Length: 144
Image 1 (spheres, rainbow, N blue to C red):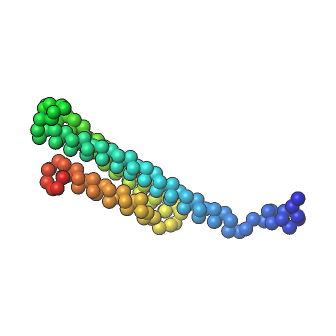
Image 2: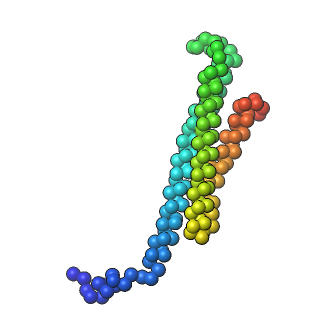
Image 3: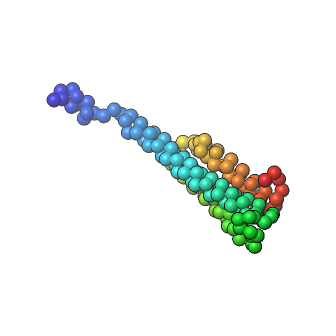
C-alpha cells in the first residue's frame, strides 16, 4: 500500500518531465529515420552488387565462347544487369533524399541542428562510389 507522500508525489509530476520526454522523442525519431536510411542502403547495395555481377559475367561470356552456354547472341542479360544497377542507385538516391527531407523538416520544427549521422555520410559515399562505377561500366574507362 502506498503512503500519502507517494500518492502526493504521483499527483505532482516533475516540471521538466514532458520536456525530457520530448527530447527523447526527437532522438528516437532521428534514430528511426537513420535505420530506415540504412535499410534502403542495404537494399541498394544488394541490387547494385547483383546488377554489377550480372553485367560483368555476361561481359566475360561475350569475349569468348563459353563451354556451357555457347556463344551469347545479344547484350540483353548484360543490359538487365545494368538496369538492376541503375535501379539500386535510384533506390539509394531516393532514400537519401527522403532522409534529408525528413531531417530538415524535423530539425526546423524542433529548433535543432540538422543531424549529420554516420548512416547519411555512408549512404552519400556509397552513392558517389556507385556513380563512379556506373560511369566506368558505361564508358569502359578505368580499372573495372
